[in-house]
Length: 68
Picture 1 (cartoon, one colour):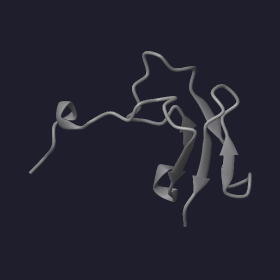
Picture 2 (cartoon, rainbow, N blue to C red):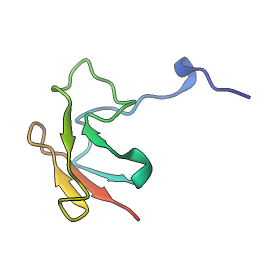
Picture 3 (cartoon, helix red, strand yellow):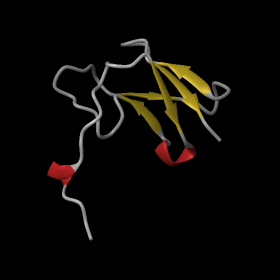
Picture 4 (tube, rainbow, N blue to C red):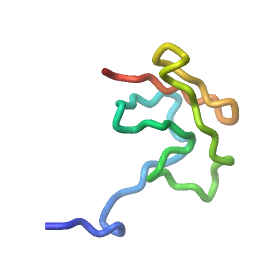
């Protein structure tokens, strides 16, 4: 059974201060795919692996933590 895009609840962008991500989310960008973009900032890629597993978005200050 497939799920339509309309049935998936989008992730609110800029609503959280901390997001946990996995390697499946790489390459990591803020806002992430699936986030509501109308009130967000330009997409920026974050080097979370090179940053030791934690990155901060320079636009909104959201902190991303890589879960392994």
